[in-house]
Image (tube, rainbow, N blue to C red; front, top):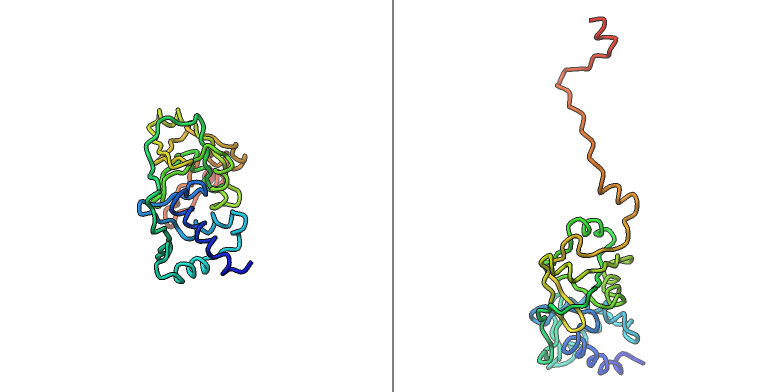
Length: 216
């Protein structure tokens, strides 16, 4: 089917993703309803029938309509019709376990320092491991799945917000989540005590050998 024949269906798909239920696709919109175009494309390309979509086709859809249902800036897109969108709501009645992913390289740091929100987004969690892995795979080819113990996290001061079928948190303290064991070499690095640096020599000095000391 040629792209022009798919355009109406594609518009309906985007309207649902950006104007109704972004959470079903693992998307969290900002306060103005925007999401990064790259993030949207990753979500689209996970859906059967839309794995061929590229940014150019989204741009063409927006530009081809005088009263386009969507608006774009340099890096983001949103729906003009946002009346049916929901906002994050504080939630203290949580599943006992939630799941999220971190990049493999960031895992040792996460174990030591916990998880913090970034400038762009809060920590995104799901009660469904498959969804958590889906989000993790968008950032890393081999993400590390973390199991978050929500009761323990709340006792440590974490606040959770429900966003459709997703959950958001500002921060998670170390010890409130767990994951697979670190590789032996990485675990050793965390426990290694730095060696004491040798005392620098004074300019022009040298060290006497035991034989030299005896002769003196």
